[in-house]
Length: 87
Image 1: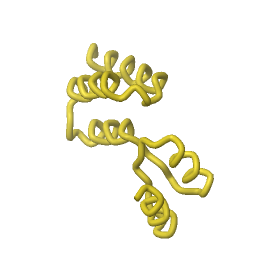
Image 2: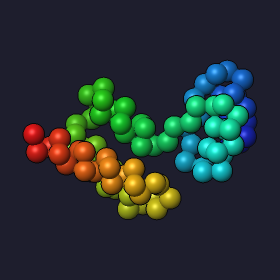
Image 3: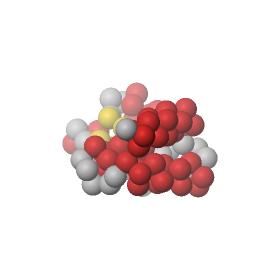
Image 4: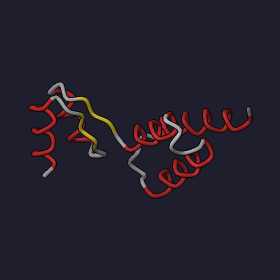
């Protein structure tokens, strides 16, 4: 199934949403734009769909349940969101 989504994104010029590291690397090598769940949270916050506080809570939950997410990116987001909440 993952390969068919990758193929569809490639042939249609779409964006591939995946958390699979191997698929992500192959798709990027093939020129496909790849996004993950962190991007989705960023977009929901950027468009005012969820608040800064909700974004932070969801990010912390994701960190607990998905140990394969990039820890450095998560920590950067946590720091940025914490700073935004203080303002």
